[in-house]
Amino acid sequence: MPIIAQRFKHFGAKMYINSERLWMQSLYNLTFEELQTYAADHHFKPFVAKQIFAWLYQRYATSFDQMHNLPKSLKTTLQRDFCIQNLKLLVKECSQDKSEKCLFATHDQHSFESVFMVMKEKQIGDKGQILAQEKLTFCLSSQIGCKVGCVFCATAKGGFVRNLKAGEIVEQVVALKRMHSLEPTKGINLVFMGMGEPLHNFEQVVRSLKILSHPHGLNISPRRITLSTSGVVPMMDILGALNLGVQLAISLHAVNDELRSKLMPINKTYNIQELIKAARRFPIDARKRLMFEYLVIKDYNDGLEHAKALLRLLNGLRSKINLIPYNPTTHSKFERPDLEKVKQFADFLNQRGLLCTMRLSKGLDISAACGQLREKTRGISGA
Image (tube, rainbow, N blue to C red; front, top):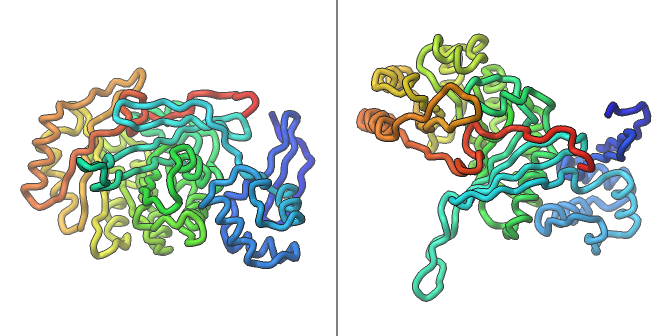
């Protein structure tokens, strides 16, 4: 439904009325500093921003009534200007490998998917003692749909709808932590490898990173956050200049322009040579390597000749290759490669000094693996 003309504005908040429901901006969209300013502008002490952040990100509050240590007048003001939740969980699918795919509905009756992944399970000793904690990764979406149009990706088949707001990105993390009753201090990894191209939603993604990493909030170290890009070269340079400390994963998928342009139309704008130059300019921690993702597709890019070309292409660049066997999608002409052939590809690179791993995607049985996410439900009523 189109938004009608009536629109209210407050500091840091936007409230819209349409013919079906009232939508207010979520508190998850505000940075800590904006919340401090909001408090001061409404004649409250600045320290209430810390209290609100604690309720949102340490106690996972879902209503203002739960925030019992806030002044009643502040809760009334916040309730007038903001909501807390703007997403609604529609469907949760569980994989045999304990991954979970969540379909979220937005306020404007669209949907997108996020994935919860158990990368390593908790190890328990004979006497019930914890020998090692589990390692968890959240795969986040930054857009509903995608403009890049990679031919192997299910997200592209649904077209592009809109960018997600920073609050909608942050809320994915809070929802997944709340859903699994995770302690606020529990370390998690975040990968922006869900739906969308993060660098096409640069402003909102960067805003979300500042909120997610704030010490009074979720306090997620930037070193635990990875942004995946198809190669939006100008934005890679801008991201590098901001020096946010996040990791960058570059979707390469081919070693020559002819094939990469067929697989990824963005290569016609920013070709491999430009992309590798941008990769060399990107600042990386001395202990880290720049990650390249290489989707291995049967009979397209899985030969040793491609491995040799990849070795030449990345010569002198401190990098790591993630080989990802193609994950099937509906009506795709591509096929999953022989895993032994992928292993030979990886061995060839490792033996010659280029660090390479084979990543078997999580959630393959629930279509939650790399390249399989998409908006599956449109026109959701009551979202």
